[in-house]
Length: 175
Image 1: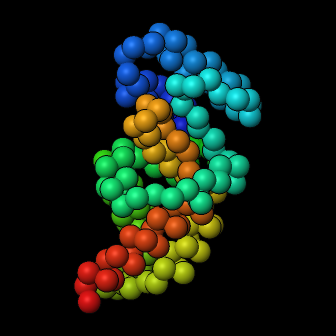
Image 2 (image 1 turned 60 degrees about the vertical axis):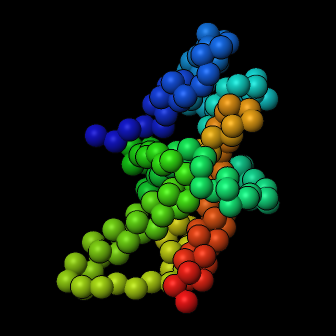
């Protein structure tokens, strides 16, 4: 049984600080009701709530400068929707952005293994991985922001950029 996105909104409550807790959980409940009634309205969100936007294209933070330190320590929730049906949505969480990007690579590697069950070792290049990401109905992640105690959403383009950084570093280390 796959977890649906609205569940994430409820799970996140536990990660939000207890002070003003009542206020935050009320906001989160309102968000969930909006979500379940079929439309996340693009209204300005009150500070402290969790913004979850499943339309990745609307969330373009790809230009944000990210330090390597940030990549190693921010709790990250990955939201994946492979097909057009909402029931295909799942989420998983990681201790850091880097672990999350590794997780995306693993999803693709599992996909390759299923397609080539008899091949002992499979190689792929980054353009194939990016094509795979592009054909997913939705892929986005929520990254914990310590300064505001909230999760910020990022889209496919941002994810691809971070994977590129990660894989480039791995190549440099193996030289």
